[in-house]
Length: 469
Picture 1 (cartoon, rainbow, N blue to C red):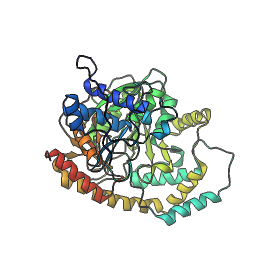
Picture 2 (tube, one colour):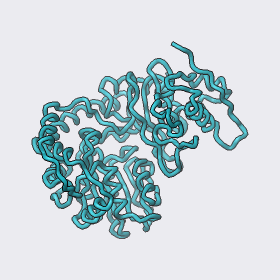
Picture 3 (cartoon, helix red, strand yellow):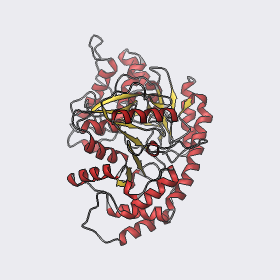
Picture 4 (cartoon, rainbow, N blue to C red):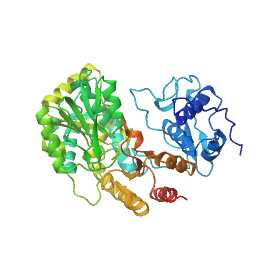
């Protein structure tokens, strides 16, 4: 195996830019210029720290940022390598995963995209991805054969196919206890798409939108791309805190069923407090129900929409329950607000694929999606139990969803993530999900896309690192 590449790196201790940022900038510049090529191995964090005469924390923080941006990848038992970004060779100003073309940090208005899938051999415990390998192939083929039988149409319904809206309304009634009819349902391409439609309809440039802090970065990106002003709404282990919310928010985006990324479930008193605030101020609460189908050992809490459909818009998706590749979600609101959003869709020439809607209708109609969800709940429950068993009481947010939170002290997460990557385990940090000053430190551990065996192996690595091994 070839040795690692020698790096011409110089860090200025007198500069105002932190050493970790300087190091990350220089490595990033080397990859853009071709000095560091795809597949080349970097020195270990310990070796590079010794070479540069800095603490290992400086190197691990720089590596962690480059891992998150997609420039680096870990290979189990082998080390840290420059990722394959050959698709960007023709234009090295177009880096992977949304990093700035001018070097340094990503553009201030847009948070970097989620990293791509890891290379073979790595265990990915980053949140946001479901298990897509176990599905009913016969049901899948049957759904798409039915979709293929549907003739092409030149009529685009901004609300979605009527039959699918009926089926989704019934699904929400059974799965979430939300009594809605098809007149309340619009078919979207997912929760991000639904949020964008709401923001484009309700939020004027310069108006304030509340987003959980820490919270879903793509929600912030959507608001900012539409000209909105972000107001970070503080969260704790239970979810968003209604006390102290300002009076001038036009909308507030929240994940009450399983807060992203800390994992809290918003209790009833806070739900009532949040809705009382919305009624008083006239704000619209956007409830992202992204993984609410998955609960473990707890009873479901009522959806915010069910408590006050006049002030709440409910977003849902098949991305976690089936697969992101399907590209189907739903938006639930009053008929009046749906009409305004439909007007926005027409104005933007926005649509959801007709054949995909037809295929999903078949999956719902025949009960295939319900059967898939029952299998998935059992599988995810096993993985969640393995995490709790191995990592113990430090884990929180494990009563629902597809990720948990493991709290750490400030400065612990980045070195641990880098060390885990060197051992073939990819992790995410809570720090990355903040808009402003970091308030919560730790790991956000997703267990959707890794097998039970891999979850156990990866958690053993984490436990060993926490124990100093």
